Amino acid sequence: MNQTRFIGHVIWLNSAQGGRSSGPPTGEQYRATGFVPPYTLETGLASFWIEDFVPGEWRSSATGWWLVVENIGSQHLQPGSIVVVTEGA
Image (cartoon, rainbow, N blue to C red; front, top):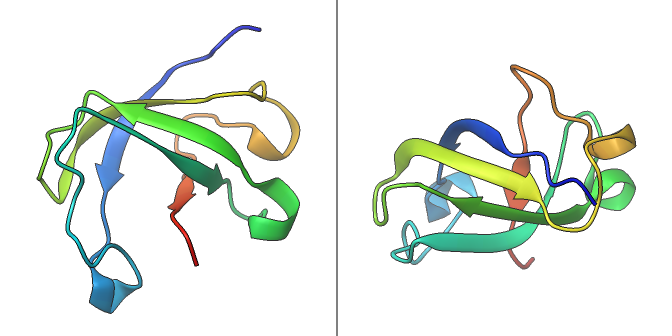
């Protein structure tokens, strides 16, 4: 499988915004699930990997890619796309 890598920015939401109560990740890599709007948790969720971000920063440049699926269909990313990364409930 061809793993297309995407270069962009990551913005971690705080708990008041519906995001992380523990703050931004402090490790060098982050794996979770995500979807590309207008798809949703129910229609477009897939595993997503993020790295090359600044650990502990709320916003930084980053590299990401889909772990299992190709960059097609409900997971298709193009310049300007947003990936909503989810973590738990």
